[in-house]
Amino acid sequence: MTAGSDSSEARTITRLTTQENDASRTSVFLGGEFAFGVHQDLVLRHGLHKGSTLSLEEERALREEDAEMKAKAKAMRYVARRARTCAEVRRKLREKGHPPPAIDGAVARLKELGYLDDAEYAREYVRSRFRAKGYGPVRLKHELKERGVARLQIEDAMLELDHDELREAAREHARKRWPRLAGEDDPRRRRQKLTGYLRRRGFSYERIRNVVEECVQDT
Image (cartoon, rainbow, N blue to C red):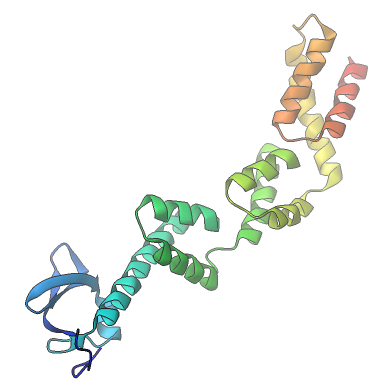
């Protein structure tokens, strides 16, 4: 991207100006007309200056590199608020209109820098949601799947759950809910309602059956 380009389609940079609404961006004029805007870092990185020439291929490469920088900046702001999955970042960038190649590049860069790690995200998600809500594995798996985490990473994250703690969490949910269902005259309906409640909190059928039986026996 220097003067003396041998491309017959190369155009000459006639002016470079800082954009009024964003001092970090530079307007590039080719042949006397505005062509495109790029981040000032790209101007320095590629040595752009008045009189240098750009081929069509070089223009396209600059635009793509700038698009990736924009996507990366947006993604960085997004993950700064709280941890995100790769799929969540991709969805956010698509919503903001970033092109697919820029999204791919931004996600790859954030993974390289350690800002995106779906495996670690899943493990921490399971630990925190279980501590805060006492949710079971079925619900936690569903929530991670909705966030775009891969199946094998989800299964690995489930290893964070201790069977004894899961059993106690299910019992705790049941102990709190069972008395509230005392107004149900039909014993079978009362059992069904408790079963449904525990299923929504993500426990397996076998664990629910055992906990419900304990509640019935203690009544």
